[in-house]
Amino acid sequence: MRIALLHLAPVPGDLTQNRRLIERAITTAARSGAACIITPELCICGYTFTDTIGTDWIIPQPDPWMIRVCQLAASLQVTVFLSHPERDPQSNTLHNTVFVIASDGAIAGTHRKINTLKTGSESWSTPGGQVAPVPVQPFNHVGILICADAFSPGIAQSLADQGARMLVSSAAWAPGFHGPNGEWERCTQDTGLPLLVCNRTGPDKTLDFTAAESVVIKDGERLLTLSSDRSTVFTVDWNLQRQNLATTQYQHIAL
Image (cartoon, rainbow, N blue to C red):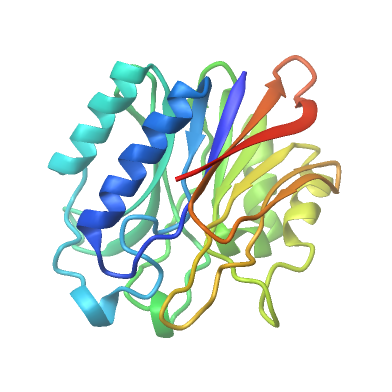
C-alpha cells in the first residue's frame, strides 16, 4: 500500500491558511494513490502560535473543521493521522494530540503527547497520561508517538507490548543542537517495529525547520530520509507482509 508523509510548512497562527494547505495535501496524497496519510506535529497552528492567537480557539474535538476532514477522508477512502490540539471537555486541559481518522470517516483513536515541554512554545500543553495502540486497517494496530515521545524508550516499548505492529510519529523536530540524535532509531531497535516519522519544514518564529527530515526506519537503520524546503507530499510504497518498504524509491509532489 502507498503511504503519504505530508512534509508541510504551516504558518504560525494562521489557522485558515494551514487548514487549506492540509486539505489540499490530503487530496493530493489520495490522488497519488496513498491509502494512509500522516501529518506533522501542530500542522494546524504551527509550533509557536500562542503569542499570535492564544489558546482560546482550542476546543473539544471533533469541531466543524475536524468533521469536514473526517468527511474528506471518507470520500477519498483514506486513513489520516491528523495532528490537532484539543481541549478535554471534562478537565478543560489542553493537549497536543494526534487523531486517527479511519477511511470511513470515524475517529478510530487518539494519542496525546506525553513528553511536552513545561516552558516555552509547548507550555500550553498538558501531558497525556495513557499509551495504547490504535486499530488501523490493514496494519492491525499502530502505535503513535508525537515528536519527543521518542525520548522515552518505555513509550514505544509499551505500544509494542500492547500489540502494535508499526510505529507512526508526527513531529516538529528541527535539526541542530537539540535535534534528533538517534532516538527514532533506538525505538525501532528496542521494539523490533518499523517507524514512519512525518516531520515538517519551513521557518517558524523561534525555530527553522527548513532542513528537518521525515524518515522511515527499521531495525535501527534509516531506510529513507526525506526533506524539502517547501511543503511537499512524499509517498512511499509499503509491503504489509514484510512490514518493510516495497522499494526505496519514493514520489515527491510540491504543493
